[in-house]
Amino acid sequence: MEIMEQARPVCRGAGAVLNLQPSSSISIAYHTHFGPHDDLILLEVDEKLLPDFFHQRVSLRGERSEDAVLCTQSKTYSIKFVGTSNSVFLTPPLDNSILYENSEDCNGKDNHKAIVSVIKVAPGNMELVEVAPRLDKLKLLLSEYPYSSREASEFEDLEEMDKSITKRMYSWDDLVDEVQASDNELRSGLLAISAVEIDGYWRIVDEKYMSTILIMLLHNSVLNDWSLDALNEDEVVSMLVSDGFPLKLSHHCLHVFGSKVEEGAGGSCLWRLDERRVCVHFAREILVEGKRKMDNFMEEWKQKVPKGMHPDFEMLEGEVLKEKFGVESWVHAFSVSSLPSTPAERFSTLFRERPKWEQKDLLPYIRDLNVPGLSLEGLLLKYTRRTQPTLDAEPVFSAR
Image (cartoon, rainbow, N blue to C red; front, top):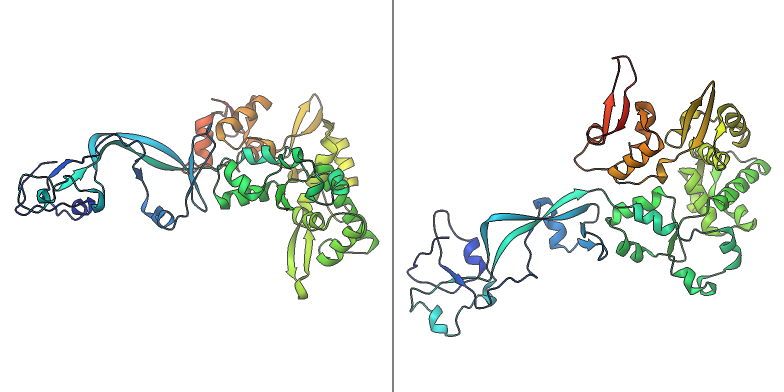
């Protein structure tokens, strides 16, 4: 910056630079406290994010071993340092801009004194890049101690639990500290893994216990002639509680396997069991032991699902894989919900399962990948090689 003399110099802070007119200049000098000031870092922020900063709706999240991310209420951003070849001068506000102890130096008597002080020369700034929330850790944390039938029967409240057990459970504040995701993304992640808050801790429920509750609900529906398309919440929950299941989990069963169809008078609601979710649940239960012949699997699946529901293999997209061995077809469980959420790890896992994927089989396992600024086609281009012997042939993808 060119140093020019002013007719009437006055000691000023950063405001003098902000109000500088085009084609004009201002005198500068080193502040008495000039130095590296590593605690001062420039951050470049998109204008649309400024309200979140001004109203203190942002937070930095991550442990010491992790790269920090910045979170707003709804999005997650990685923080990257970008160096610059230009000199960027930082000037403090007015209260800190006095350069000289002698006030006469700033009263206009000495026209050669600088009027704006520089406290630091910044080598660059931090930039924010929107990224997908890092929710794999959420599944890992909540899987440490799932809620089981044993816990429901043995512990009436948390005070009866061993302290070593409660250390493996996480409140909302614990998850905010541990998981690199915005609050909204964290809530969506909890919903996606069917987590439930019990006594102030977020938990996933043991699959066998969840299955027991569902089977009892279906049993009660037969005994009481309930329609699975119009289940009265109060009746269902009351019956499950009388069968010995916790109130919270009785409600949770409806949320996991059903959807609300009507708000009833006095707060009661009508629920419909979701055919796909219920059928997928029983398919997983059958395949938990390993591979099954396709014909045998379909026959047992049809017997397990509730009367009135019609299992279709297309329901199992992203849940079950079919393979051909000679003339026979076999199926085995392979759920998208168990795969990593980062694209590189996801594709690596997929190609360990199969070296080559037909497009119709691959798409259900990558549709949920969330990479801001990168489409599904972009993901395939980045992480796979596409081959297509003829124009009519199904595209095949292998690892890049």
